[in-house]
Image (cartoon, rainbow, N blue to C red):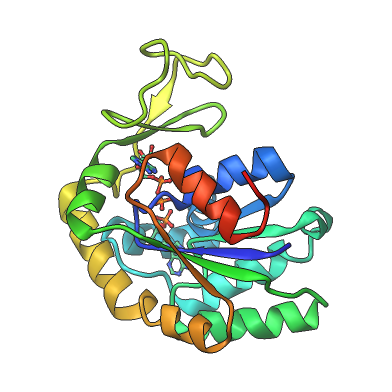
Length: 217
Ligand code: ADP
Ligand code: AMP
């Protein structure tokens, strides 16, 4: 099963992708994570993407489509892919259709996660992750069970993204509304779209997502 989680920054795509990965053995393909890894490694792509990401703007379609194409050539994607943060433009959506056809893969569902902008600013501003395993947390909505210790791996190191500040979030939301939100109509026309309420508690969102995907809860 190959699916897209479509939603604005902070909608909960990464949180839900990790849960689906654990429960159903799917592979998370997050272009944001891949670009951050490229920035950290100082690759040519990372050098081009760094300033754009810090400004909350979109990295060029060519770069992003290139890294997704390469990733889809790795064997683990056969287990099924959760696209998280891709596609984000009409050109990326069309390129994904072509890539999947070329690689003999199909797109099963696109789940649109609906969350109001005011909530997103709070979600993104309070986000932090485990520096070791990447488990996501939030200052108020999802704190580690034991303060300062990751529930998943026991690490005591956490990190925050440089672009997770209130000012950059506004730019990212603008980019979402201008470039990405129109994809909802694109996938509705293709008969792939399912909508869920992303404003419910994390567990309730997971249940709605699993129902939308026909995976039961
Ligand atoms: P995205 O990947 O869509 O940008 P994340 O999954 O990283 O979003 O979620 C953003 C922040 O909001 C994280 O700190 C996460 O812990 C928190 N969060 C995710 N889903 C919910 C939810 N349903 N209710 C409250 N907080 C949530
Ligand atoms: P994310 O982790 O999905 O919130 O993405 C973080 C940042 O990476 C975005 O604000 C963009 O600058 C860049 N990015 C991630 N995915 C894409 C994409 N599909 N297209 C363009 N830019 C992207």
